[in-house]
Length: 149
Image (cartoon, rainbow, N blue to C red; front, side, top):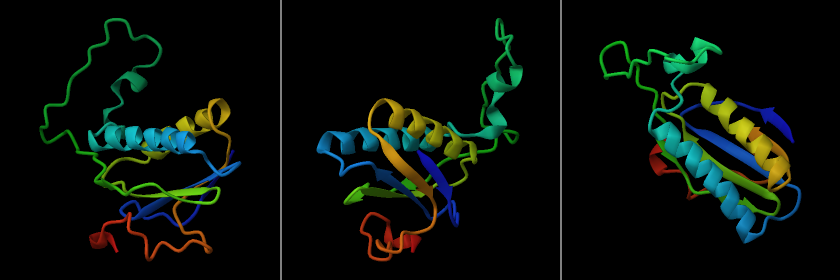
């Protein structure tokens, strides 16, 4: 699977996925579950790079002193704001996101998941992050809320 980054606006981000073949209804559902799960984790603040306490602890995790953020001034919010519906045209799927204040680690996690998804479930040719496909303009998409235009 090829990954391409194009023009990025985290508050108006299109994600493009190209399947090897026109996806079946079940394959569409699989992709939608991956994207919905990713967005839900982002909506809950799961992609906050300032709160990677376990990652930063290294390999020795036994008896880790994990301090839960209490929402105080040192706990910066990192929340995704909105997600459109997944649209399909031929072998392509696209979905609009407002990544809000979530950190860039969110994209790494999604791309890791889509890489494994492509290997184990449905073959993907490429994923394009940001930008627009010339042959499928986003200007008239009903999946993106009008307030984001």
